[in-house]
Amino acid sequence: MRYGLITLAAAGLLLCAAPSASAQSDAYMRLMRTQNQQMMNRVRIYSSVRSGARITRYRGAGKTSGGTAKGTPGSKRTAPPASGGSASPQGGSTTFRPVADSIMPHVMAQEVARTPDERPRLEKLFGEMLENYRSRLRGAGGPQTDVSRAATYLISASHDAYFDSEPLSQEEFDALREHMREVYATDAKFQRASDRERQEMFETFGIVATWIDAGFQTAKRAGDREGMRHWRGMARANLENMLGAPPEQVAFTRNGIMYR
Image (cartoon, rainbow, N blue to C red):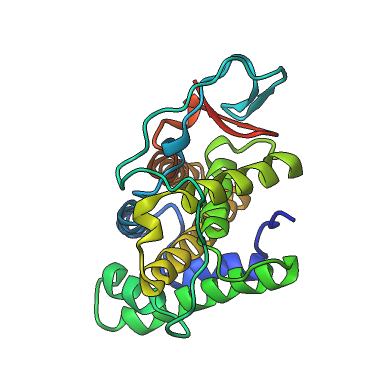
């Protein structure tokens, strides 16, 4: 089950982190650029395990650039593994045992806040975003501490914001989730990661996915084209960080991610 868009109430939380000026104000745009850059930097830190570790070549299959092209995948070849070592043939776990109630709301608030007074407010904001994601995970069922599942949500939310068109179908989303599970399960670097490191990745992906989901939809509902442009820029960076290629070179298919 894929996750629906977060509610307007949750999306409105983003505005609490911004000045009271309108979304078009220079102050708001400067703040949003700073916050988004911090978020992108955080994703980049944790995106060394990428779908690019299992690149396949295809001809005429899947959804690219926000559209759908039907067809059967052509010849495929697997690219060399991404940095992190050779893949384990058997694969491994993609989950973790929690070491704390939460880690990243506090860490990310320290990174994003411009003043000491902003830190508790942002920590609360990020904590609520994380809880929003966890609540939807509980509603959807399945594993609740799966890093590959959180990575799938970040890719899906970034895809929807960047292309601003038809979202991934249920079949495409399910295939993406399975693809990412295989990537993390067979990446030697990730398999060596501690429970704390995995929890940090999980929370980062969940918070940033909710952040971009809420931010883009809030800007879109407000008709804020400049805001939408900045959220799309963040979405593109997330896709490149997570997938190892520009989004226009990626196809989301019923068989998983494929690359041109």
